[in-house]
Image (cartoon, rainbow, N blue to C red; front, side, top):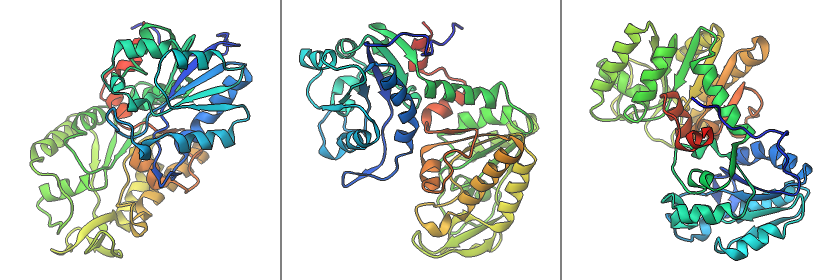
Length: 396
């Protein structure tokens, strides 16, 4: 396999137009940014580009407008955020990608930024339209993919654009790829993977891959309910996925084949509604009207012991219904255990997934792990062993 082309300081970008594809797809409510982790992670690189006298063109998407202009999915709030946090002039561009856009890019002074409106307002983006990609490439002398989380998509601003302009992966993209290597190829055993979420069916391939590379697989969140039900335990009104018995059988078979221990919670915090208060229950005491919404103290103690004895931990998916603060204890406690071990004894810790980041938001965990990934589906697909389309084109 050919080597990935990664941008470095040796590449001269002074006075050159550098188009950077970012993932600034952050939660926005009433035009207010609710979580700025993804933006913050990009600020050091943007400042570096400014310092090296590049002319910077930023491209990102927000949500799924499906080729239509939707005011609630405008990147204007992100533009205002960058305007406050970057020292140089930044211009917002919300018109067509045409000769006028090219002129705006060429008229930039060194260190200035042209920030394009939501690229998915153009239907050609998700079509991976080559003509549109060529128009985008005309804005730049160099293209840098700094949106690993989008790289499992074949879209114009991240895939086809590389056919028309000198292209590289950015430093954050490189970190994401290296973090996957820490789990799959450069891991330090024992390896523990903690997987949450609600659906087994969408994660069966990554679970199968992780089992082959791990010593422990800890299943939390609503996904664990299916394992409990498979064992014949009563789970009340808890969320489950139908017809997944064959998936669970496959996981158990692979775990036995590859000597991977599968841990399922044994006690819980439940309630009669998603908005309710926690009630403690062991696995045999859950009532018909109750919903499992977090792990219990005994399960948490067992998970922390496994983390303490591990040298590599990968975590994707919260342990409970984090939207209700009454059920965040399990998730926050797991985060604290991983952070403590990372700091005290150099545990390799890879933490990611949109819901995981949302659950940890505001908890001060930004610099607590070896790598905090903002990627979701792209990261999991890489763990399955797939080469992402927008990564593959950077190897040419």
